[in-house]
Amino acid sequence: MPRFKNILVTGGAGYIGSHCVVTLLEAGHEVIAIDNFTNSVEDEDGSPALQRAEKITGKKITFYKADLLDKPQINAIFDKHPVDCVIHFAALKAVGESMQQPLLYYQNNLLGMLNLLEIMRSHNCYQMVFSSSCTVYGEPEHLPITETHPTGSITNVYGRTKYFIEEMLKDLSAADDKWNIISLRYFNPVGAHPSGLIGEDPTKEFTNLMPFLAQVALGKKPVLTVFGTDYNTPDGTGIRDYIHVMDLASGHVAALNLLSQTHIRLKVYNLGTGKGVSVKELVNVFERVTKAKVPLKYVDRRLGDISAMWADTSLAKEELGWSTQLTIEEMCTDFWRWQTMNPDGYPKKTKKTEIVV
Ligand code: NAD
Ligand code: WQD
Image (cartoon, rainbow, N blue to C red):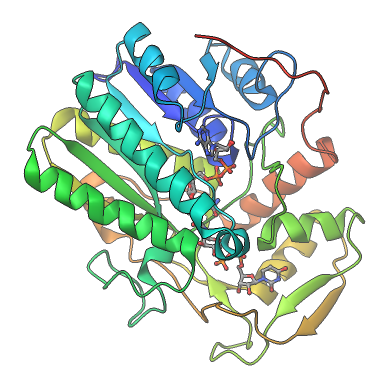
């Protein structure tokens, strides 16, 4: 039995949250998940992703439809359940939308976090794992990127919400040593659970490479637009550190283990593979392992994109005892299995249910 038994997962119905819930249940944790379904599918019984997580693991999840902006609702959940640690995934994450609607992003991501921290404190719960992002680094000054790389020169509002939250966490842990927090800076999460039962199915518009690539391979979109062929990279296309979502999930269990054993106050870790893969390389691997054809159209660079980014993963290896296990081939195969088994994503039902605490 892990030392932290009851884990509250915010944004548990979302892409990374639902995969992490599977890994948490398999590691012996009890999960209380909350989500307001702004970017995940809801059905008559709640979250189809979490129902499938129950099917995969044979374990039960306590789920509440709840919004972090609704303080009384979140407070009531904490009143009802003793929470040992919170994993905070819930956020809005679309870079383009964040530039058009900055207040929506500041309200949801910053106020949501503030509410959560206040409620945690009032319930004597001081342990948290926070979903941060490699986006906090902005344009890299050196590669691979270590956790000590400067942060804050970010040109999009979404990324700034992650940066501001990290700054807020620094102030909080400096002011009160009861807090014990790990901020995980994810690189580019892709892939799906190997069962093909759960995967990425956002309800908002998405622009990320892997889901777009899969839609083109499925014939749902005609062509994959490759943004930029003149980067200073070996094949001219952008380079990223793609990480399998199941490896990312196990990174959270490693973070929980460290938090439960050591009072670290606040630590930041990169979660990536340490390897950079270009757009062209990813498309080639995807076509090879899936046997699907992906028509490409080359266009100019996308505004705000950086050229190349990959993680230095040595700190996570040393201190969390964690490293990735899954290859780029497995990321493509597992994502494709999810897409072909669920070409329209999770079954969507029309009737909405309110789950009242
Ligand atoms: P996601 O959109 O699939 O999941 C987030 C979930 O949070 C969604 O189900 C959404 O409905 C929920 N949510 C949002 N605001 C909420 C609120 N106020 N109250 C309750 N629920 C709310 O996104 P994801 O890809 O699973 O990302 C999870 C976290 O990881 C986010 O914080 C994101 O910023 C971060 N992250 C994601 C990536 C990526 O590329 N996917 C990379 C780095 C960091
Ligand atoms: C990857 C590469 C594109 C789509 C985003 C967020 C960032 C973080 C991770 C949350 C780039 C190229 C893409 C397409 C393409 N998320 N591309 N055609 O840009 O690294 O970052 O996700 O924290 O905040 O900004 O990811 O998947 O959009 O792009 O050529 O249709 O694929 O130019 O080189 P990115 P991405």
